[in-house]
Length: 199
Image (cartoon, rainbow, N blue to C red):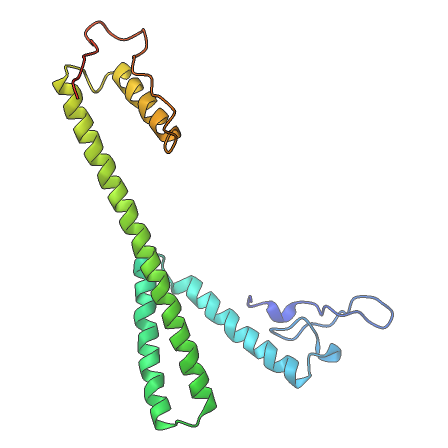
């Protein structure tokens, strides 16, 4: 809420059906004559003002920083474990306080959810890293094989042949009846001679 929030017009209508010309109380959309003086409205309005100030301060002072999802979850997990430990001590001192018991159960449930999310996120990150490493190793192996066979791994023709065979292998994954065309296209350079390989 802005500093001029208290100057907003009331959102109610008069008995004649025209918009009220009174100013709404701060944190509410109603003036004093249209419900703004009711205790529950005043409490809610005060709460809205505090929340708005907190959000405004967070926007002003909270600076964005680079962080991975797993690290953010880990930080929240650490904070939540601290909350659980503190509330556990309070419950031990006041075992019959229903409010403390409720907060304790809520924090423990939050801790369990965070733990599950971290395990899932870390697994996804590991799979991504392993896939990237596998691709890098495959590229190194294919480059070495091509050079040893006398082909230039940087030529557009060789890259096109590799891309075509990889696409066919991916689209035919799980389909054992699909055959990959072993003959390169007719526009191959003269220095690339297909060789017979004994298996």
